[in-house]
Length: 586
Ligand SMILES: Nc1nc2c(ncn2[C@@H]2O[C@@H]3COP(=O)(O)O[C@H]4[C@@H](O)[C@H](n5cnc6c(=O)[nH]c(N)nc65)O[C@@H]4COP(=O)(O)O[C@H]3[C@H]2O)c(=O)[nH]1
Image: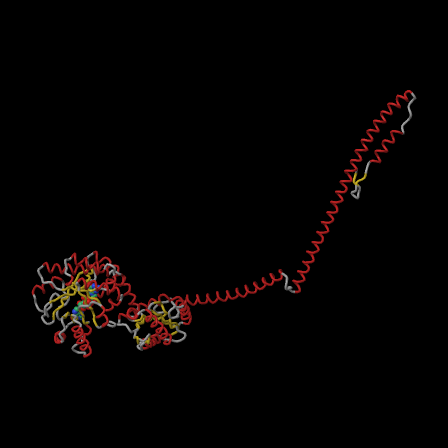
């Protein structure tokens, strides 16, 4: 069986039959032989016939199989044609929908198309995203500008800050250098601003700073720069001045403008300013140096009584260098035991008896001789050395009081000066307690002298420390009374025993009516508040008599006795003299 080109089955039946036919058509054999042969041949023929029939039967079976296979194949072919047709149909449909989609893409979406909805939504998202990103860019740009502004301006006053000032000053210096001109830098520091912050609170302090910022801007030209350095410090740049007098004129204008009160939160606040001025190129060739020079000059303006201005001078720097060398040797002075205490008697004006003394430090400098506290105390305060020095003073004074007592002298009150840093020190109270115990000193014989500014520097914590001291039995004197910011409120607030009238009032009580009135008022205030009043700086008999007439309790001053060494005070106590007399002066 074979499969024709059309794939259909053909039968070999005919060719097998033709093979059988050709055997019957061979040459004929003899008769006997023919009989035998014809029997044999009949047997052979029978065998052949049997085999042919078998072949035929097998061929018919094959043919039947072939027909079955052919039918199966035809069925397979039909299925294949069916599947192909289906596939072609699907392909056509896909092509059709693709064409429709393309057409819809071109002609616009039809309302029912999912794809077009998705496409439209995607487009909408794209548009929204584009708008959002534009908005974001704008927000980022605004934030960048704000950040830039913040980086260059003071948050409270919105004035240029130090960074912007340095930038402008550097540019101004470059311009002045090229044009051969001068420029001025002014360093401004508000006088006693801290008192306002401490007494009226930081909100009022902030409002005052804002008001001052406006005032300063109004005082200068648009081309000038007013910057805030932080705290109560402002720096002004006058980028082009014809003459240093222009800077002096501007500084004076500012000081005058400050005499008007600032109306803040129902308060009329008066505040003054100290100004230091430096000039390019004389006082510095770069921004940092010019600001530093103006700052140094400002310190000198403060030292010169505040509310004024000073131009920078080279000697000011020399003094700064000297200050540094004092600081370096101060550190060694304690170990080398170079400090010494002098004692100035406090005298009962009526009896002339020494009732107490004030311990006053001196520095026996190996090269410079005996130095007064004014030459080193403020430096010691600035660098923190006042803490160990103050501890030494307290212990030395208490030990001296013990020595006097052990020498059989009657006990007197010993006063020591206390600076702000000492009062704020964590171990302040503990140190006093320990020293009193160590030196067997009764607390009532110890008096601490504090100025108003010391009290104000941290009024709350100061008060609790002072109350504890008061409970202990120690005394408290308010030094330089009348020179501070607002003395009267302290009298209620702090446990003060003694008022010390500042020597600046005592100096002129016999020649200046106002000073005399102030002294009289303080004496009577002390009496009505049941506080001891002591006048310091009593230098003349007239002053002494005036104070006596006013019934001032005590006096201290050169007329009564200069500060003297311990042995000299012991001698005074021993002799029981009534002052005024003095001996062994320092
Ligand atoms: N012109 C004149 N002056 C008189 C007269 N009577 C006394 N004085 C001076 O006036 C100052 C009084 O001391 P203070 O007001 O506490 O002023 C003191 C005090 O504030 C400070 N100080 C002195 N010793 C110490 C100390 O141990 N610790 C601290 N923290 N400060 C001290 O140094 C300041 C100056 O002390 P000193 O130079 O000893 O100057 C003393 C004294 O010598 C007088 O009749 N006329």
